[in-house]
Length: 519
Ligand code: ACO
Ligand code: ZN
Image (cartoon, rainbow, N blue to C red):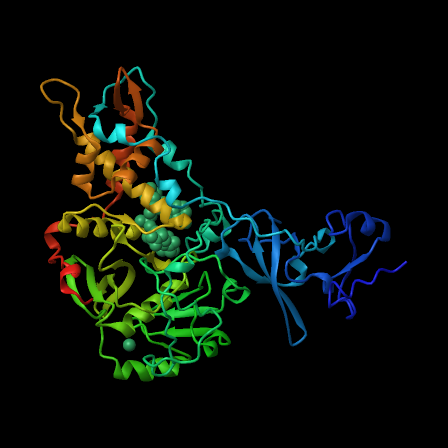
């Protein structure tokens, strides 16, 4: 008996390339299918199906066949390819694969109720304390640095229990970790009008792209998180970019003009961030482009590291190009082109050829939620070298100059959370370790004092202390217990932080944007 599958799967009438006998164990209509013993063909592998897929791995590594969802399929010049998302892995590992990497005999057909699960690894919730914090904030916290009777957790062992990324194939391929995806909050009401750019002029609105967000204004935030992803924005659209001396493989979709999605390399001017379709165009552009550093004011310089402050209203083109570039590596935020309400702090490294962009963060001119960072990025060739922490340190230095505490805009990405956790932990521990005993008593400090010294927001201080498992309740008081081992580990970690922000090299006066009436 032959079942008519064509109405469910439009490809079943086509000639099949490979024929497998399916185990059919998890098919939509399990019982019926088992009886029939249907032959599974590649034609049945359609969008929404799941099956084990061989992950790309480095030579000498063990094969991994995680469950993946088919997001798309294409056939070009007789070559069939499938775009897959590995279910329990970050989207940056999604890729096009050839049929030989699919375990078709274990194909699961899409179910109506089936949705790609997203694990919540980082969100606003994660950075908030789970226990009432008022008591903690108001009581003096005693810091006990002696060997004590209470448990003395080791700082780094706790920290290392965060998702370990180094063994992932992608981590080895340029610092891309593979922690589960962050769950993003729906944020439809926070969107701004998008302006789409014409590739040539890069200053005139062009044809809207499929990812055009709704036209509602949003209250705050730069790249609002979004759930309303369509299939187009789920698929990486740019194969490679060339930026200065680096060729970089993007991690996510970014709404560059459609013409650039069909070529193998998009060339980007490393100083003004204009994008062009060929090396020739770039060379032509370079004869006209006089920039050797980002626009805006250089507000910090120490050794080869500089920071430029760029006003999203005054340098719109640069800011929009920066957002487009950033989106290639930021997944949990949707891109908006209204850059007027933002300042961009671009970190560069100097050499004889100029000031090369390493990373940046954006910041709202006015943030109702006291965010001091909207989006933060270290470009992949520079990642995992301490630059992310340097960007974070700089953002808190600005907050110190403003006399405010601040926090990064939520949700954080998986890598964002790792970096902030690490920065918060080290910054807070540095204070605790250096506290001096008063009149022979244990040193005392309040949460508020830690906030004032660091500009880290109260909730983040408390969640970090809790995350490090340092707080104990003892005889009516909160006590922080640091073992000698954890102090040593902390000191070793700090010694590795070779590049630091030097407040003396920051030449900057905060502006009160609320008083200016106009951004
Ligand atoms: N796997 C494991 N740990 C990692 C990884 C990784 N792939 N990347 C960073 N870390 C850890 C580091 O080990 C380090 O901790 P440690 O010093 O305690 O060991 C810490 O995070 C910071 O490392 P840096 O080298 O200073 O950070 P980096 O330059 O790599 O930049 C950043 C971190 C900015 C998050 C970078 O990964 C990035 O640009 N990612 C893509 C964009 C993104 O996700 N941005 C954050 C979004 S949240 C927001 O915008 C508010
Ligand atoms: Zn240029």
